[in-house]
Length: 357
Image (cartoon, rainbow, N blue to C red; front, top):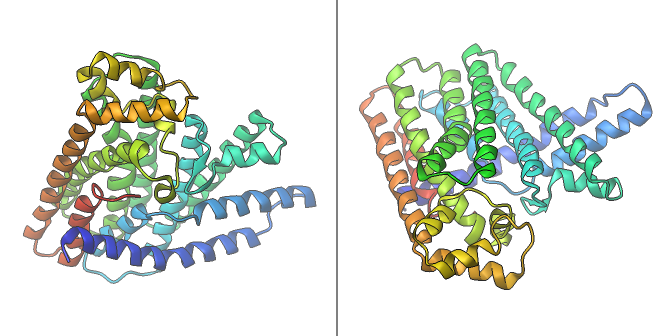
């Protein structure tokens, strides 16, 4: 089994291990029965039940696994504190998805309704109340995640969490700004992927795990930073490809929404730079239009293929994945670092650009 497939297997095993722990956490939180009267208690109960259902939908759980394997680099055995931090990271992820889906006006997440759409239906089609409840639910779940990580009792891990999510918010704001203007470049796209995905999906959980493992070698963190920046870019380039060419039954989300929302992706940029007039016309019929026929969407996707944009994006993703894997390999030169943890971290870099989910 090659290193990428081995990492995939480890990640699948990890999902089977953390999901029951997440379910147990939600049972305890819901049992708290918070509220000042019966009506509020029911509302909180329903909000948490939806958040639990959202959180427990099929997911890669990559971020939680990075907490564990950042910790495992220390060579220490996992304990309840590390699992608590991993659960916290997964809650934070759910909260940020709720926010992101509202901002992107997505309707499907992980094969189920996005939170603002769930509440819009509950409130008889009231869009504003649906979106407002999504923000409130996400804020609550975000704080639950912060609480779990803070209660791990490691100030460096807490600081990393807070600063990491702050910087992720700056990245999200940058994403929104790019959508507002037309003069964006490949450098803007790569910067965006570092500002959002690299910090939030890679560096933040890896650093938190390493801090919990009491790793104090600055060279380790330098390597993890380099790995995270390149790995995060590779991950997001592949995510953008799946956002157009993925299978919804596998990805759990639409394969049309990125185009309809006018997302600033490398796929789109390269077609705009290198495509023929007719290829650009096919793209502009759907890009940012919010609604389009299936025929026009398929024509735009074909234009992305024929223009060479798909091949360019795929090749660049592989280049960044290789750079990330090479960075992870440098950890092998540090005697006190656990090699099995390195195997996983290095393997994930390569697996993330061949995945279909």
